[in-house]
Image (cartoon, rainbow, N blue to C red):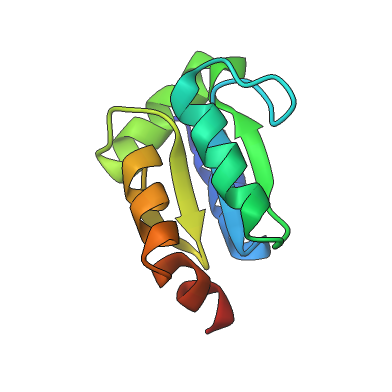
Length: 103
């Protein structure tokens, strides 16, 4: 595990309510799952930050090891890893994501 990326991930997660590690950017997602997550997070009207998982293979590997999660994107809410696209979309639909943000 890359310690530099681990520290950066931990810092980002502590400093922001929502952190989405995605493929590409908000403006130019590189996969359909990223596009869905960006749409859902945009609907929340809550600030969030993103990091391009494809920017560095070490970032991708560090996230895989930290979360034991092999797919992208990977989303954190209020310091907690919540999962990927399908989980975040479902949490949004049932209101759980909005509830997490108000705590």
